[in-house]
Length: 287
Image (cartoon, rainbow, N blue to C red; front, side, top):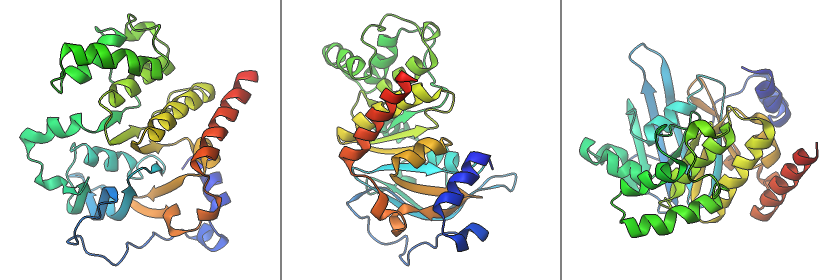
């Protein structure tokens, strides 16, 4: 585990848990219970074992409510990527139940997976942009894949490029952009359909602190627009400053969840969250 991650856990966990962090026990509720309409994501006693014998996830139970901004943290191999890959149907659980917007994921057959993915915004660490298409065309492609008309595309793409600060880059190709600009294109593409859920897998992993704050500001604006946001990240400094809900994984097990109340009194309001981001961004700009 990286030194920064150990430092964050040492600051936040009570002394007894510093000596031996115990997994958070799942609530006493069955996977067969009806879905809670307040939840966008529900994991019920979910495990996933790889063919090589490695454990990707071990009896994980958690919810993400509509309108939440949640961080998923943990060291490499802790299970963060496994959660994200299961949420986009790249991996199937060995056991347990996963629901998205109340629907069990195992009811989505293979033919419907592309349609499902079009309704979930996904931001990757490595951007996954089409190298031979311009910024405009990369974003427009996400709309055309859902059957949008040319009129809809002409109306929506300029708006999302303005939101993401890319209105002067619409004719540029990915290799003509900085890493931060490429990530903004990735966010624009993920959000252009205004999905109810946005998943960001290490969105600031390869970016400098100033650029990382800019990306987090952008994700925050998307959250304020009504989208539920789940961010998997190694950026413990960013997580520590934001004081939002944090779900921490270790060895595939949930060992920390701010929803238990440990951090409730310190969690910032939505307005304080935005003010903090703006202040930190200005401070970095002066440094």
